[in-house]
Image 1 (cartoon, protein in one colour):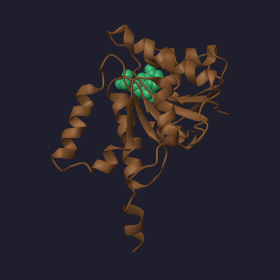
Image 2 (spheres, protein in one colour):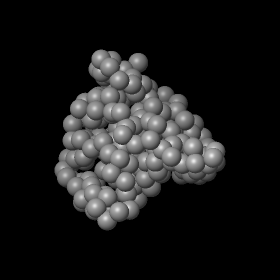
Image 3 (cartoon, protein in one colour):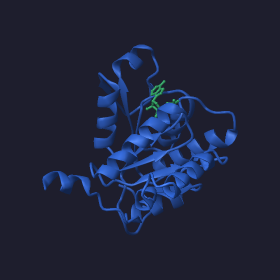
Image 4 (tube, helix red, strand yellow):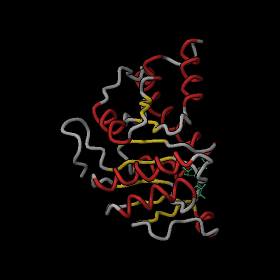
Amino acid sequence: MAMDESNGRPLSAVCVFCGSSPGTDPAYVEAARRFGDLLGRTGRTLVYGGGKVGMMGEVADAVLAAGSRVIGVIPRAMVVRELAHPGASEMRIVETMHQRKALMSDLSDAFVALPGGIGTMEELFEVWTWAQLGVHDKPVGLLDAGGFFLPLIAFLDGMVTRGFLRAEVREILIVDTDPARLLARMATHVPAYQPQWMDERQT
Ligand code: AMP
């Protein structure tokens, strides 16, 4: 049970999307370690893609070192290639990438992306799109490090200006450089956006 927010959602299980590479700036790996350490110290469970390499391995190692649980969700083909973290508290084996994302989502109370590549972006945008559609109302955050996400944020803000993204949907995505502040903001975030899609389908 998470213990560092006095109000808001407890966010007991946090799903992390991040690179299977470490990136070139040491600030990225440092952010992965700090975020994993925070999750571990606050008694949260990490849910993630189950890898032992890059940023993924760093987050998982830090959670385990701080004494908390790590649940990996990994497609069978990746286990065979020995990419799965051997120290994970639990490793859920699934058949497809789609099953992986669905299970990671079901097991989690919140989603946080750290610097990563196209796999990270794909996972982030899918869960954010699900929030837009009303499939879930779990908070979605970005932990920035070394200014990695600044070009993406500028692009997203341009999407709002150009009329392709509603400002209330943009605001679902909470961005911070500090792990504890990010989680606190996510725990207490009340979205201005109310999904219309489900209701419209019923009418
Ligand atoms: P990328 O950002 O392209 O490095 O992809 C990272 C994301 O894709 C992670 O959040 C994982 O869910 C998934 N992924 C990519 N590579 C691996 C791997 N070697 N082991 C486990 N998951 C991976």
